[in-house]
Length: 403
Image (cartoon, rainbow, N blue to C red; front, side, top):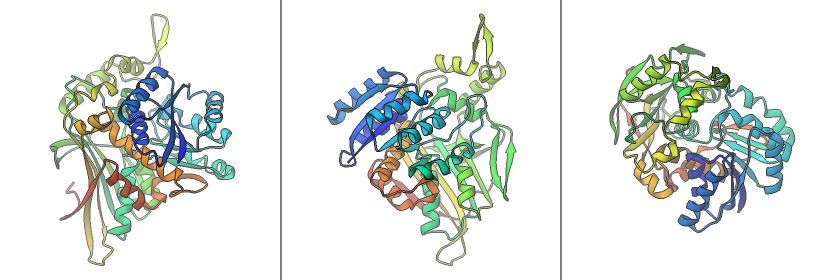
């Protein structure tokens, strides 16, 4: 049994801590820290009610490397699980290096001043972690995370090569709000409004945000409009599946969401550069975040399902020619809320965070340096998805997507 320190008390942090508490044979002690201690205390109270286990809580500003280092040294965990904001990845990695503790996150670093996420900043820590004899695992959420494990499982069990890959992320849930985001509004809107990029023939192809739309009929959800976007796992998948000719990421959005977002963009509310208001600097997107519904408050009203998966085409392992496989998970918002008090968007990230942490603290996945999901055997990860609330299925399709 291991002690872990979780940093971040949003919906994902809540799910991860609940699921860790439900697995005492792996996680002997769970500690939770956040900028707002009251959020940690509320999660701890829910965990106590649901599992009977105690979770110690702390207040921490994860941007403060010295303070975070001091907290890690005080807690003495085997692993720090970073479920805070992507802006804080490097600071928490620095604190882990200073304190001599392994690191894991669910989303890659992006600078506050630019909506641009790349692995280069974290990959640059490779030699530091290797020299310290420590391990950093990047991106053990759903996308990134499970989507990479899906691809590598297909490559291990079904396909000798992957020629094309499409990742399809559908949230078919309805929370009853006019406009709300299912995870951190600031991160969500930065991601959606950034230019789209996909991998094709050894290079990145950039298109305007939300400019490419297709319709797909998702099992258990139905037909939905989905938009071409950039997502960080495309970068690591392109690196670790070098034969891949094309990789794309698609996410569904309803018409009402697109209408609201377009208006907010047009009036400047999605800007991430500071403006002067009543003599003070404010960032419009951060102000917008403050007036939008808190994602963790949406669990009790959200109904419907998510459907997230990979469609991969390549040379079959059995020598039968080119084949296409679709591997995916369907998650029910109401089931997720009943188990952890959080809706499925948080659940589908928080459960894989727990699984990645479990494989690290048990020594199933181990190494020295900075690692992406694609570098490890997917089988134990895939087995734990089935056991801990995210069962997956795979089926053969007649061919790749027609578009």
